[in-house]
Image (cartoon, rainbow, N blue to C red; front, side):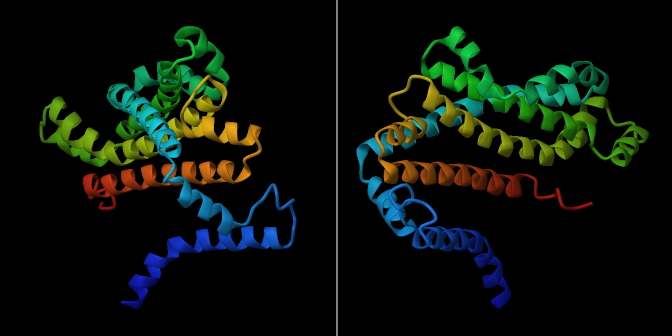
Length: 254
């Protein structure tokens, strides 16, 4: 019973250490107190800000853009990754393009997307979807290619059709790696949406709120918005972890 509670309390150690270090930095005046308010003041301001309609609007706008861009990325990336992974020669022929664009910072492509989509929500969603789809595609493809060879050979020996091998073995075994791509993809989508909200004309969103607060020197609002962004990313990742545990419950078995 004690060990169970200890394991549940382990995730709290990091936040507590951050809180204590933050408080130490403020008390020791390592930075100007105006630039670094205490964690108690910042967290208090953050919780009070939830009663502000503009904060709820900004959270909703960022969450909407993130989920829409991620949905586009998943719908495109998973099937395409599975198809490419099922034919390793085809994947190898396209590997350079996939790795090239996956390694290119998506924020560097913002000017290109602005030329195509203009200063609209479609721009923010498109650039975030582009960044996420490459990660999802990469992981889905490698999940299929790394399906256990012994099971594939056994299925072929037993005369199972290619479709059933693909559907029941390769696709199922690729799910664990695919979920890694999905979790990474949703995090990347959030990051790019925040960056796009900061630097592409936007009237709503947490990224817009962060840069606006910095420009008018509203430090507490800036920190509160950053913390809310981090919490949003953590909750999205946690949601996918829970879905993965229910969906890929066999992944830890031989």
